Length: 257
Ligand SMILES: O=C(O)CC1=CCC(=O)O1
Image (cartoon, rainbow, N blue to C red; front, top):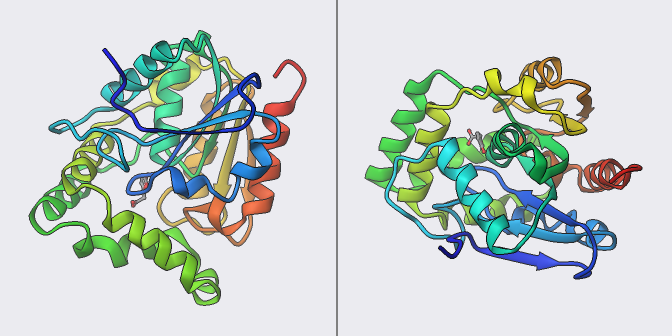
């Protein structure tokens, strides 16, 4: 079966592949700030989750297992035996699933602004129902307020508006189905099986996946390393583009990478 995931590819064809997974309600454009730096050394493949961006929108609810298996199918289609993987938030959740369930397919892993368990389930199911009934604009202000610190939002209203537009362009059905995947998710029991070198990055001011969630991942993934990025909320890669770009490049360029 051909992949249902839309891919955006940059960088030299012969370079090692670095797969980038985006957050709930965003798409490949979320990674624009890091692509120039990373594509100097890597074949950077950004994928849109099922139900997001230009990927297919099968009927929900989804699960992390479904999102992860779809990505594995994509790697098979591309004949990729292994990749480096970086994911933010929902992208990080898929990254944890992949590294735990297909360890031979992930060489090095970076998990940004993410969580292995983001309960309770009730509010996620309510968010899914709200979006199915009223569309993304009904929740956009609340969600975007968690993506950026107030200082950044004041300084860069253009960036905030572009990311809000990405959110409201997302399929309501696809977004809701991914909310249901998060509602049902508990990756904590899987983390001890991850044996790939792992960098965990948290935004110091992230109200969506707070630093404590990153510490829990680091406590469970053997050898994982934590970096807390100051003055950044949930989309830390957008708010602190150069620092996050450097962290990723250094992590994936390390010996053996
Ligand atoms: O939308 C939010 O509240 C924050 C978030 C959780 C998972 C994700 O990708 O974004």
